[in-house]
Image (spheres, one colour):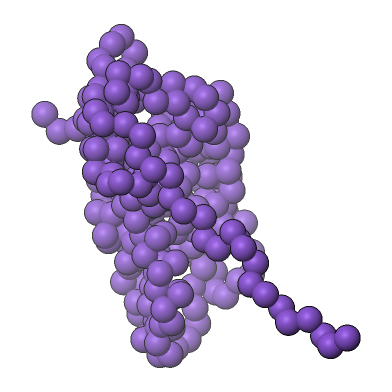
Length: 250
């Protein structure tokens, strides 16, 4: 008998998005927060907790994500909902572990590790990163050491303690946003600078990608890498937006 021809697998393509199952999206304001309702029924997180947001502004922004869905629900277009779910399911009750993880980035912060060459990259790092370090030293009393290459730098414990103090006491939603921004940039300082209003999200994103942008300028960027970066930037922008929605301007 001859060799059988391989046939394409059935039903193993990209999974289809779930159909929209609701018409109305409303917000119910009550003591302790604002609950999201779909056709008057409470929305649940993946862990089955009720989706309750701490501020009116955040609740309305999350509700708008649900209202904007078409015939099918696309989670990729709902970054605030994703982040709120993460705060409720993954941070509440685990605040100290999340702080510890953010601090693990601070101890190896991106902006402390500098290139020795080429001159253009060194200049770009200096331009974007030195002001962040100066702000941390002045505003947070947390000066950090610089190094060249990837050799580990032991940072002053007093500075790390002060950075931890600037994070400790934040609510679960703030910690979730800070953790996302830190993980996406490799820098707790950039995340804190955005949270403090020292940098705009756009400035922090540009600072976090000095090295990557330098490489793109030299060699170009492929389509898949550009798509991954766009997805990361969307999540970063959502985290920054969540911070503003927790403390909306009067």
